[in-house]
Image (cartoon, rainbow, N blue to C red; front, side):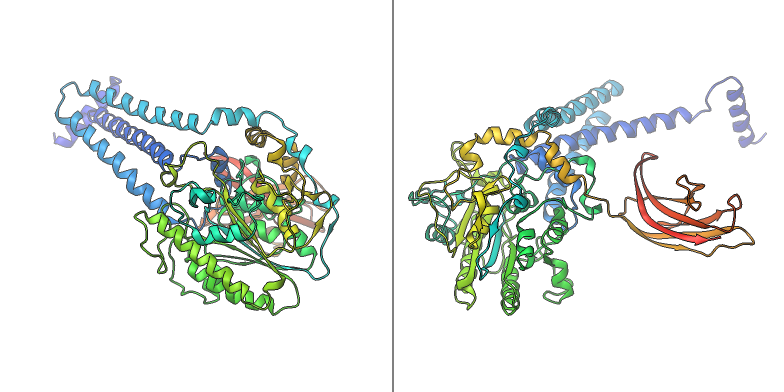
Length: 614
């Protein structure tokens, strides 16, 4: 008898006796072994990830995480991803390998040792996640989200209900968001927190113009309240007077086709007044929902990294940092201002710098080596560039009728850079209103938030605002109290974390944008079929297509067919209509479906609709 026959006979005998064939147990043990060490590696990875996050973003808020779960991430600086991969993945891998060597060669009771290592890794990973949840106050956030608050609605002033009167000759606006720029970086004598001023030109600009510090001769700035502490939250808050709160169940912003359509913002008001508006940035505007917001409110022309490539402002293969550096942004902005100033309409040019973004900033060709810390050199370089751009503006013919607003979008995320700043020091975003035709009515140091920029910007254009309040913001040129002059900052932050039916109503009309190429053949009377083909589905999360057929005048579907995928996200098949009477018009609706774990989690019912005659 051959060896193969013996093996076969042994397997058959084992099967008859209810025993597993030899080798099956070994395979199972190997699978368990691999899974065990994979869990160990993942646990260590989770623990190390938490430490990395807390080191890099010590002031991270849960609202920021929730927002970026919904917002488009296209255009993210790969430096952050690279830094994570460099600091976290190798660590987890090396520690896992060391533990495996210890387990494999130094101990005899391997099952017990492996179990202890697994438990230790799980405790480390789970403990780190619990620690992160504690630092982010996740439990408190969840509890607050289930508590209702009418604070926003009670204090909100709808621009529709306010008389806003612009001067006969409308002033131009240049609004510049300065990435992570704080008052903090100035010297203590000027109101900052550093021994040496690393932004002297910006300090001088604010002191010579208006930061609403009254007669104190120190810099003042805006407090970034909850849900305004990241770039998109800041841009939204500065122009709407509201914190950016969108319920997570509304879905991701890369699949929406509107952004709070019932909201009236700075962009909407200026558009109504005939302004031509441009958003010019050195990164991808789609990131964080910026493109959707500014195109939805004010019909801004979007001139971002992609636009710059398409219009040959930069080479097609040029990409640094988040896209291109501020030196190029300011150069392009000068060209844009030349174009805008040549038209008949007043203009609003909105810029966003990027060189000073975490981590450590981008060292461009203009940076000097004046400080030991790279970030200080980048701040100093940004200060010089912004000051030189403002000086250039003052030399142009259109400047006399132009207001310039410089604001930091939020505080820096680089905790190490401000680790020596006293905990008692109130860090604020940089603020400077330049060449406004109005003077503050109060000569005292104001307590205000970035939400106050909304009405204050309009006032800086010479507009008179009935009641001097818009959104949750107050016109800082007026004598009216701000939100932070009426309420405790911590109380306001708490209210912003609670469920607001007012904000829920603002977001309920944010509809889903889903689209696809659809081809439907003519009705074939011989086979009583039509052929449907669907491809180029957006968003990419769409992984299923459902075709529904409705008879003329009927609300209930007569046929519902899931099209099979025949290629790379191409869905097609024949629909058998033999059971449907001929001589009528049928409505064909093509829906997209998103699945997770084999279950449909979201449907997009408006993908395509048409009619056919049979």
